[in-house]
Amino acid sequence: MEEQHSLELKPIGIIHSPYKNMGEAPYQGYKSKEISQIEVFKEFEEGLKDIEGFSHIIVIFWFHKSQGYHLLVKTPWDDRLHGLFTTRSPHRPCPLGLTVVELVTRENNILKVKGLDAVDGTPLLDIKPYMPSIDGKSIVKPGWFEDKLGT
Image 1 (cartoon, rainbow, N blue to C red):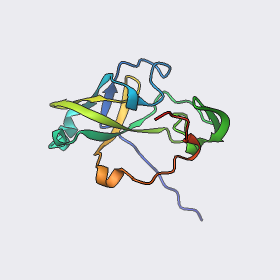
Image 2 (cartoon, one colour):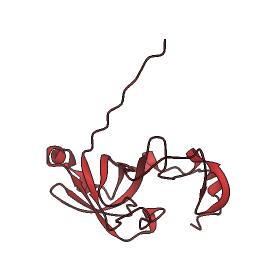
Image 3 (cartoon, rainbow, N blue to C red):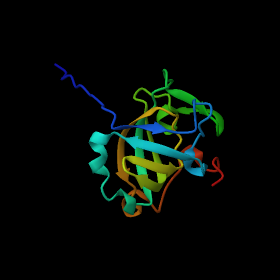
Image 4 (cartoon, one colour):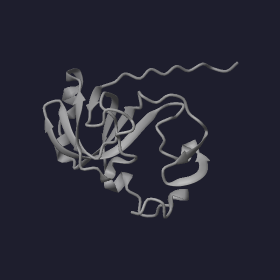
């Protein structure tokens, strides 16, 4: 008999951004200079201790506006169909978002960041420090994205 697993996610905060809907949000936030605010709920504020020492953080959030998904999708960078799990589409079976952002400043439980591509009101699930020696990789294969992003 197959064991049943349950999963419960509890937001630790909310994202305030200039993007009021998915159409306004950039496809990837890394080129954006817009400042967004990450409000960490007061009950979790103590967990932000020492975050000011990091230039970048990883923000994990819930694509709360996402509705449905397809396992084969077209992206803004290519007219061909690609497997959903080889894209960064917000329309997923488990709509988690993950973005590395620049931490501009902290004011108590508010983090001001650059490069976030989430819409206003997005539930915040977690924050982790970005560590170049751990997260950065020197040899990377970009798959079908090669020559698509112009970076």
